[in-house]
Amino acid sequence: MKIIILGAAAGGGFPQWNCACGNCARARCGDPAAKPRTQAALAVSVNDSDYVIFNASPDLRGQILATPALQPRSGLRDSPIAAAVLTGGDVDFTAGLLNLREGHRFGLYAGRRIFDLLGDSQIFRVLDAGLVPRRELPVDVPTRLANGVGQDLGITVEAFVVPGKVALYAEDVSRADFGSSEGDTIGLRIADDHGRAFFYIPSCARVSEDVARRVRSAALVLFDGTLWHDNEMIEAGLMPKTGARMGHISVSGPEGSIAAFAGLDVARKVFVHVNNSNPMILDDTPERAEAERAGWIVAHDGMEIVL
Ligand code: MLT
Ligand code: MN
Ligand code: ZN
Image 1 (cartoon, protein in one colour):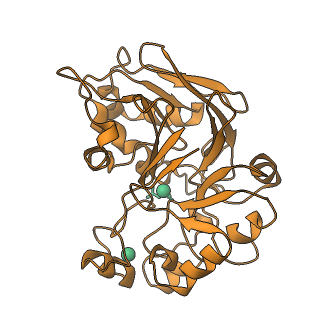
Image 2 (tube, protein in one colour):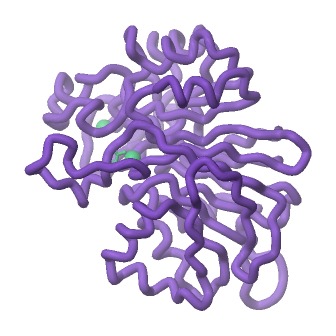
């Protein structure tokens, strides 16, 4: 199974268009220790010809242009993208679907909550249901993925609910939970037919007992690395929100993901969806060194992993 990290940054990317924080400034001026990153997504294939993309980021068009494996193979109109799977309704996970509107057939998979959000937005009707069938992913049931005409892709995904929050644009601020409900954020176990499997969890508010049980002893987990600590955006003067308010666990601290994964015996641990404010996004910071000492890799765009 080949996994290509199309984008490793959180919403906004790195550098973010309207951000002049120290990290973004370094990325903008070409500092080699501050590699630019696009918004989080993966491409996965078991035959190196048909690919499934996991989340459709607003940067998808550029990600395809940067990835030869996702470009036309033969004929006048073609794309290796056979299916897309969404783990949340956030702009950074869905807006890229609009880049896939030029008459290409593919299977679109997401949970009920996410399809409800897409259904509320007329603009996604541009993906003609005759070409892009919407196939609901049940939770806790392994589901085989198929292309737009129903041909099996040799990949099975199991969706599971993870702690999280409703998409920002759909928040109901009159409610304590912002109107969130189960299935707003899902994690995925992605497996081939030869016993190889990994987890993609780009957004997660907490490593619950259920999440810990699922990922224990996994060969590979790609996990939410949004913020280094909960207050970092407030302290940097960027935004008045904590990570918890945004539905993201922090990397550091006793409640953070490094601590939560410490006893879980995961062979390869990779941070994705890393925010531009997070000091570990830079190659030369003490925070990056600390993450690496704890056995984590901070993903970068174009990184490939073969399982
Ligand atoms: C997030 O990860 O919290 C979202 O991408 C925020 C957003 O939609 O801007
Ligand atoms: Mn995001
Ligand atoms: Zn920034």
